[in-house]
Image (cartoon, rainbow, N blue to C red; front, side, top):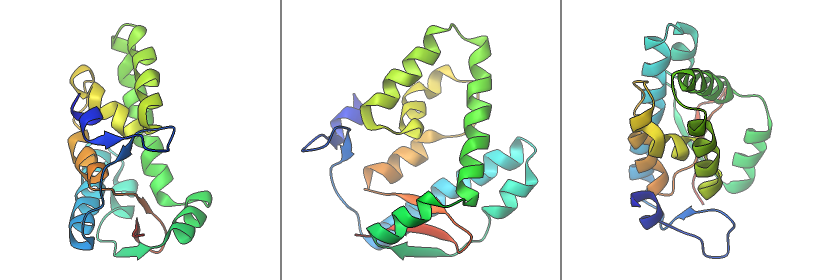
Length: 154
């Protein structure tokens, strides 16, 4: 209910955040989410991914540059894949219906991190998706590229 209450559909197929925060707020929230992912990678024994996500500059970009970067290979996809694989592996101790629940929750906002935010109490992993939720709630979109942490600012 918290997620649904902080989003809106408007003219979209999927839930969208209601507003857009200042650049300072977006930068802090983006850094916090990347830091949480880096911490999780290190905790799970992947020092290489932790290093990729550590001490990177934040670069604000427009919609076109953001989506162009999203279509290329970037370190953020490696981190996202590592986190996803770890979470999916944690499903093995849960009923099969949990996998279906995750897919249904994905359908709300087309965002796996938000679905895991809702499912977090069921998953036995230490990553804190409430940090991602706060970033999303502020209107945040980011990806880790070779240049730095790209934060969409338009």
